[in-house]
Length: 189
Image (tube, rainbow, N blue to C red; front, side, top):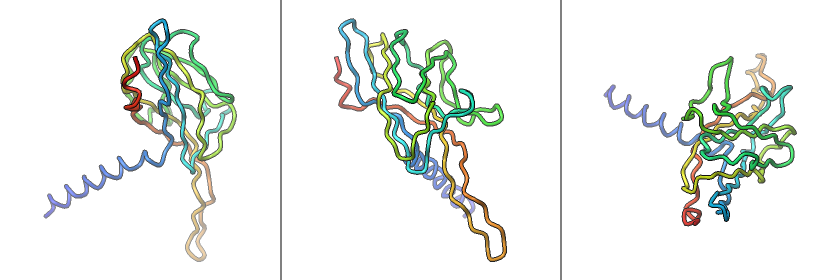
Protein backbone atom coordinates (compact mmCIF):
# COMPACT_ATOMS: atom_id res chain seq x y z
CA UNK A 1 0.00 0.00 0.00
CA UNK A 2 2.76 2.44 0.94
CA UNK A 3 4.67 1.53 -2.24
CA UNK A 4 1.55 2.21 -4.35
CA UNK A 5 1.02 5.55 -2.60
CA UNK A 6 4.68 6.48 -3.21
CA UNK A 7 4.39 5.61 -6.91
CA UNK A 8 1.18 7.63 -7.24
CA UNK A 9 2.79 10.60 -5.48
CA UNK A 10 5.83 10.43 -7.76
CA UNK A 11 3.60 10.27 -10.85
CA UNK A 12 1.50 13.22 -9.65
CA UNK A 13 4.67 15.23 -8.96
CA UNK A 14 5.98 14.47 -12.46
CA UNK A 15 2.70 15.59 -14.03
CA UNK A 16 2.74 18.81 -12.00
CA UNK A 17 6.30 19.56 -13.11
CA UNK A 18 5.59 18.91 -16.79
CA UNK A 19 2.35 20.89 -16.67
CA UNK A 20 4.06 24.02 -15.27
CA UNK A 21 5.89 25.37 -18.32
CA UNK A 22 2.67 25.66 -20.35
CA UNK A 23 1.79 28.71 -18.23
CA UNK A 24 5.16 30.41 -18.53
CA UNK A 25 7.32 32.40 -20.91
CA UNK A 26 8.29 30.48 -24.04
CA UNK A 27 10.90 31.14 -26.70
CA UNK A 28 9.96 29.81 -30.12
CA UNK A 29 11.63 29.65 -33.52
CA UNK A 30 9.30 31.44 -35.94
CA UNK A 31 11.38 31.23 -39.12
CA UNK A 32 14.68 29.89 -40.44
CA UNK A 33 16.26 31.43 -43.56
CA UNK A 34 18.94 29.63 -45.57
CA UNK A 35 21.33 32.28 -46.84
CA UNK A 36 23.29 32.19 -50.12
CA UNK A 37 26.59 31.70 -48.25
CA UNK A 38 25.26 28.52 -46.58
CA UNK A 39 24.60 30.15 -43.20
CA UNK A 40 21.18 30.03 -41.56
CA UNK A 41 19.34 32.91 -39.91
CA UNK A 42 17.04 32.06 -37.02
CA UNK A 43 14.12 34.29 -36.03
CA UNK A 44 12.85 33.92 -32.47
CA UNK A 45 9.80 35.20 -30.59
CA UNK A 46 9.17 35.43 -26.85
CA UNK A 47 5.63 34.59 -25.71
CA UNK A 48 4.64 35.56 -22.18
CA UNK A 49 2.02 34.34 -19.74
CA UNK A 50 -0.67 36.72 -18.45
CA UNK A 51 0.86 36.78 -14.96
CA UNK A 52 4.40 37.59 -16.10
CA UNK A 53 6.12 40.83 -16.97
CA UNK A 54 9.68 41.59 -17.96
CA UNK A 55 11.34 44.40 -16.08
CA UNK A 56 14.67 46.16 -16.49
CA UNK A 57 16.81 46.26 -13.38
CA UNK A 58 19.12 48.82 -11.89
CA UNK A 59 21.86 47.08 -13.86
CA UNK A 60 22.19 44.38 -16.49
CA UNK A 61 22.77 41.89 -13.66
CA UNK A 62 19.33 42.51 -12.14
CA UNK A 63 17.25 42.93 -15.33
CA UNK A 64 14.99 40.18 -16.68
CA UNK A 65 16.40 38.28 -19.66
CA UNK A 66 16.21 35.24 -21.95
CA UNK A 67 19.15 33.01 -22.96
CA UNK A 68 19.36 30.52 -25.81
CA UNK A 69 22.16 28.04 -25.08
CA UNK A 70 24.74 26.46 -27.40
CA UNK A 71 24.21 28.44 -30.59
CA UNK A 72 27.07 26.83 -32.52
CA UNK A 73 28.67 28.83 -35.34
CA UNK A 74 27.31 32.25 -34.36
CA UNK A 75 28.20 34.80 -37.06
CA UNK A 76 29.71 37.86 -35.35
CA UNK A 77 27.48 40.92 -35.60
CA UNK A 78 24.49 38.97 -36.92
CA UNK A 79 22.30 39.15 -33.82
CA UNK A 80 19.46 41.65 -33.81
CA UNK A 81 17.21 42.77 -31.00
CA UNK A 82 13.74 44.31 -30.95
CA UNK A 83 13.32 47.77 -29.43
CA UNK A 84 13.73 47.70 -25.67
CA UNK A 85 16.20 44.79 -25.64
CA UNK A 86 20.01 44.49 -25.53
CA UNK A 87 21.95 41.52 -26.98
CA UNK A 88 25.05 39.82 -25.57
CA UNK A 89 26.82 36.54 -26.19
CA UNK A 90 29.02 34.71 -23.72
CA UNK A 91 30.71 31.32 -23.80
CA UNK A 92 28.96 30.52 -20.51
CA UNK A 93 25.29 31.51 -20.83
CA UNK A 94 23.57 33.85 -18.41
CA UNK A 95 21.34 31.74 -16.16
CA UNK A 96 18.86 32.90 -13.48
CA UNK A 97 20.36 32.79 -9.99
CA UNK A 98 19.23 33.24 -6.41
CA UNK A 99 21.86 34.34 -3.91
CA UNK A 100 24.56 33.33 -6.40
CA UNK A 101 23.21 29.81 -7.00
CA UNK A 102 21.65 28.74 -10.31
CA UNK A 103 17.87 28.34 -10.14
CA UNK A 104 17.84 26.08 -13.23
CA UNK A 105 20.49 23.77 -14.65
CA UNK A 106 20.68 24.03 -18.45
CA UNK A 107 23.08 22.01 -20.57
CA UNK A 108 25.66 24.66 -21.44
CA UNK A 109 28.55 23.34 -23.55
CA UNK A 110 31.83 25.14 -22.68
CA UNK A 111 33.29 27.50 -25.30
CA UNK A 112 30.04 27.58 -27.30
CA UNK A 113 28.26 30.88 -27.93
CA UNK A 114 25.03 31.52 -26.03
CA UNK A 115 22.52 34.20 -27.02
CA UNK A 116 21.21 36.46 -24.25
CA UNK A 117 18.70 39.25 -24.70
CA UNK A 118 18.21 41.55 -21.69
CA UNK A 119 15.15 43.77 -21.38
CA UNK A 120 15.82 47.52 -21.15
CA UNK A 121 12.17 48.70 -21.15
CA UNK A 122 9.26 47.10 -19.25
CA UNK A 123 7.23 44.49 -21.15
CA UNK A 124 3.54 44.04 -20.26
CA UNK A 125 2.04 40.73 -19.22
CA UNK A 126 0.80 38.43 -21.97
CA UNK A 127 2.87 40.07 -24.72
CA UNK A 128 4.51 38.38 -27.68
CA UNK A 129 7.76 39.98 -28.75
CA UNK A 130 9.16 39.30 -32.22
CA UNK A 131 12.42 40.49 -33.77
CA UNK A 132 15.08 38.35 -32.07
CA UNK A 133 17.47 37.23 -34.83
CA UNK A 134 20.84 35.43 -35.03
CA UNK A 135 22.77 33.78 -37.86
CA UNK A 136 24.84 30.59 -37.64
CA UNK A 137 27.33 28.96 -39.99
CA UNK A 138 25.82 25.58 -39.07
CA UNK A 139 23.43 24.17 -41.64
CA UNK A 140 21.82 21.44 -39.52
CA UNK A 141 18.62 22.14 -37.58
CA UNK A 142 18.90 21.15 -33.92
CA UNK A 143 16.81 21.38 -30.80
CA UNK A 144 18.15 23.76 -28.21
CA UNK A 145 17.46 24.87 -24.69
CA UNK A 146 16.62 28.22 -23.17
CA UNK A 147 16.21 29.82 -19.77
CA UNK A 148 14.66 33.08 -18.68
CA UNK A 149 14.25 35.29 -15.68
CA UNK A 150 10.83 36.94 -15.48
CA UNK A 151 8.84 38.91 -12.94
CA UNK A 152 5.72 37.08 -11.77
CA UNK A 153 2.89 39.06 -10.21
CA UNK A 154 1.56 37.33 -7.09
CA UNK A 155 -1.96 38.31 -5.98
CA UNK A 156 -2.76 39.53 -2.49
CA UNK A 157 -3.62 36.81 0.04
CA UNK A 158 -6.43 37.64 2.44
CA UNK A 159 -5.97 36.49 6.01
CA UNK A 160 -8.62 34.86 8.17
CA UNK A 161 -10.91 37.23 10.07
CA UNK A 162 -8.68 39.33 12.31
CA UNK A 163 -5.44 37.89 10.86
CA UNK A 164 -3.21 39.94 8.61
CA UNK A 165 -2.93 38.90 4.97
CA UNK A 166 -0.17 39.64 2.51
CA UNK A 167 -0.13 42.35 -0.11
CA UNK A 168 0.28 41.65 -3.80
CA UNK A 169 3.91 41.56 -4.81
CA UNK A 170 6.23 40.89 -7.70
CA UNK A 171 8.79 38.08 -7.47
CA UNK A 172 11.50 36.85 -9.79
CA UNK A 173 11.02 33.45 -11.40
CA UNK A 174 13.41 31.24 -13.36
CA UNK A 175 12.26 29.20 -16.34
CA UNK A 176 13.90 26.54 -18.46
CA UNK A 177 12.61 24.81 -21.55
CA UNK A 178 13.36 23.07 -24.82
CA UNK A 179 13.57 25.12 -27.98
CA UNK A 180 12.24 22.82 -30.69
CA UNK A 181 12.52 23.70 -34.32
CA UNK A 182 8.99 23.47 -35.73
CA UNK A 183 8.54 20.45 -38.00
CA UNK A 184 7.51 22.63 -40.95
CA UNK A 185 11.00 24.16 -40.85
CA UNK A 186 12.78 20.79 -40.99
CA UNK A 187 12.73 20.89 -44.79
CA UNK A 188 14.68 24.16 -45.03
CA UNK A 189 17.53 23.63 -47.52
